[in-house]
Image (cartoon, rainbow, N blue to C red; front, side, top):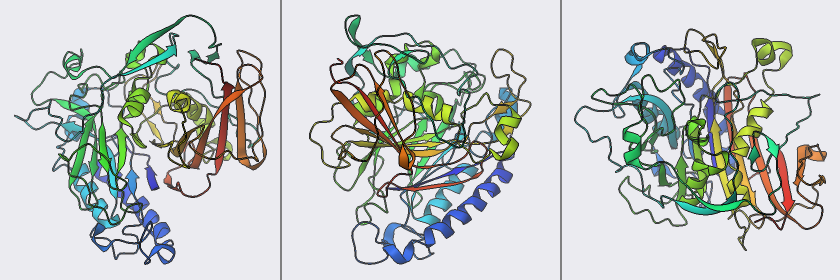
Length: 489
């Protein structure tokens, strides 16, 4: 798959100005894609340009990208202090400025476009309709080690460190607030992990009781400009609650035909069958807080969104985000650190997808067990909004670090023999760097281990406004290996 994100620094309330910023980045993206054209035109198969893919097929970049993902509320900005403050930015899913931009950009690039926006649902429409969202199993029974989790301090994100230009990461198994705990022995029980049912979301306790209702949404548009899905955020962060209702139109799943990966296949319609073929990619959609425990009150190991990904059989996950950091201004931009990723935020994101690493690997062929997750975050600082955290000052600082990541369970890809391996004691996790930008993390007792890999094809910096472009057929720029005792249950 060839995937891009636009890591924007939107100004609060400046919709047209933010669209102009996005267009400037699309110009850069288009030039980068055009460089691939000579390598991919003709010959048929993956990478050949399908002239019918979109209006841009002959523009220099058409058909050379599968998906473009923008942040949560990309053009409005995110941290509004009240309903009245955001009201001028609310828009229709069909004819608002975000929809018009997505339609024109999808045609221009000949790709699927996913972009977040503040939705004003149409008066008289059925906001409970799931016609744009393919159904999938609602629950997944998993036996997991149960441990209550705490929300990360400071909201959606956590603090970071980047030591001596050396990537270091500590990827923790299920545990309590970052502590690794033994998963052998008792205290196990079967728990059902799932998003709340749609009916539960009607009484969400927010102030969004007006008609028409309002949602924090993500629009997905086909290469021809038609709407494929309009997903509504289900797990609200507290800054959403003054103006938005919890999503009511499904858990966020559809089958996408990717124009670069499968150029000759027709795009499924919104009402098409949920059965997939080799020409479509089962895709899950979430928005930022959706990957956290519900209201930070659910057990850490419920893993509601990751379980949804597994239950739906998704192989691609799209995540528009406005994820926060606790870093101060000097830590975000001082001393030339703008281009360095927020690795603590990355570690947290990865930890919320732990079930993807624990799932059974089976005898899958190369690449078949891989789930690709697109973390499309924003950068910048917003002032004058809601207070973030107990001692917040109304200034929201965003973590950036947008990336395209592959979660590979053992058996999903052939083992890479050149990787190093780091041993840890029982109940601990060690970290370190090995050659080639790879990191091995081993959890549990010495002896037989099960393994998984986390591939990172591209990652932007913590304060870098730019384009993240990745091709998952190429070798990743970073590779983390996670190992643990094979006897865990």
